[in-house]
Amino acid sequence: MKKIKMLLNYLKKYKLYAFLAPVLIILEVIMELFLPNIMSNIINIGVANQDKNYVILNVAIMVGLTVIGVAGGLGSSYFAAKASENIAADLRKDVFSKITRLSFLNLEKIKPGHLLTVLTDDISMVGHLIMMALRILIRVPVIFFGSIIMAFFIDVKLSMIILIFIPIVFVLVLFILKKAFPYFTKMQECVDDVNSIVRENVSGIRVVKSFTTEDKEINKFDHTNKKLLNTTLKGIKLITISMPIMMFSINLSTVLILWIGGNSVISGNLLVGDIFAFSQYTSNILMSIMMASMVIMLASRSVVSTERIVEVLGADEDFKDNKDSINQENVKGKIEFKNVSFSYEGGTGDEVLKDISFVINPNERIAIVGAIGSGKSTLVSLLPRFYDVSSGEILIDDVPIKNIKLSSLRKNIGFAFQQAFIFSKTIKDNINYGNTESSDEDVELAANISAASEFIESKEDKYDYVLEQRGANLSGGQKQRIAIARSILINPSILILDDSTSAVDVKTAKQIKKGLEDYKKCTTLIITSRISEALDADKVIVLDDGKLVGFDTPSNLLKENKYYQDIYNSQLKEEA
Image (tube, rainbow, N blue to C red; front, side, top):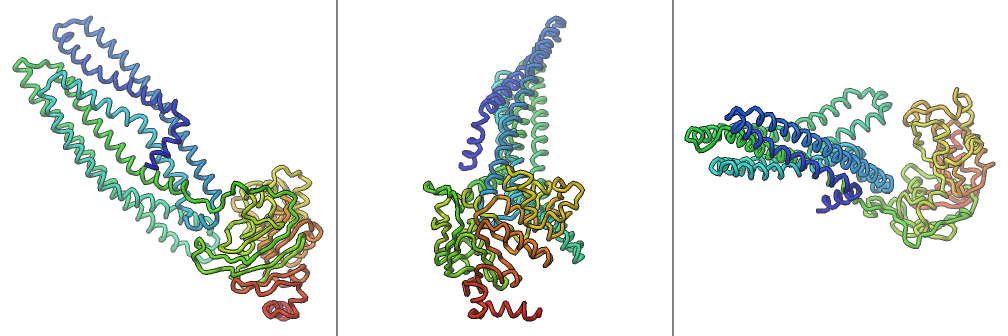
């Protein structure tokens, strides 16, 4: 019911198209229903009496009705296509919009291949269903019942043959489709797996090639592809059985009609033209059942696809603005963590951060250090609410971040990730991605601060240089510098650099550090694996296994904090 309601809601917007398509298909069917009867009259009257004028007149009427029917059919197809394709486009837009609003936690629960299948294959399937529903679902009952009525008018006795075949054929087709339905669900799941493997291999092609595991990945894909093939074939085998059943029924009914009808003609109870018309109506009836089975088959697959679309559209958004949420203006950059704990899996997993409390003053430069897996990236991901705390509270300028509108919160936070994502656009488009209103001078200033201008100026098109997908024509360090420039250009009150200089050399890292110091307009949090980058920070956050084990100036920590001393000694003293 929920699936039908969803489709009807989308159909409302295109109710004119949805009205015209079935009206025109009814017009086409009515014209078709008249044709066998007129043909019967031509044979029984015109040909039997050798009345040439009668034949010509009725043939002209048939041509006229055919033209009207064709026009109705074409119009119905056009408006059905307009409705179905517009609905499919709206669904794609809404599903994509929903995906962008889901939290990291939501997205981590869904296979990327699943989302791709929903956006492409599933929505296309639903579009086809709507197209057929607006045409065939209307056409089938009209031609079915119309042909039965017309057949009864010709001969009641012959009509009994039809009444015998209809339930037999219908039950057999439904039985076959019921058996085939589970395979449609498995088929869409297999498509998910194929998409996931393709996406994974395209994204990680460098790893695949560097470890020469192409054959392994090909075999993995081949296994999944064969699974999809076998599942599809099993479903198709069952579906194809319905076709010979239908054709056998049509042919058998035609033989019986000719046999019984022929005897009636010989005995003078029926005319030759009536047998012809009756055969046509019988074919129409059984063909309409065949068409209905095709719609049911497509509907069976579409039910699975619609369920998957509804699943995505109905996914709970972890983060929604409260009715009292505010737009935070003139943010100074004070950050406070109050007894913050966090765990993944919706708060049911092991705690990644445990009872963390600290206060960062505006414009302070804070370094965050700790072993791998200590919770550094998770800590900073809580600030823009990529995840929500399991317990405790985070405040910016003494306002709980849950009371700030998400758009306002994130506009005040510049974030550069370690894995810098680059879009297949120009360098300029990538830098001003979060602030398209920025001037060329602002873009160049951000590039200077991040030490990106050095390699940008060496490109032939400079800032108009087009980058390949995921920045394939840039080095890792170059991508990181563009990501830093992008985070700076939004003029944030809080800047987070999540180990975002890990791929640059020491000299360039110093240039970036100097640029940020000169820029110093915001509170800066820097996750770093280099203790040298923490030495001149205002304060250092030291994490160990999700616990805050140190928060002080670098000099005080070096004197008093064992964890910081261990990190310091393991890097600087060994280098010395």
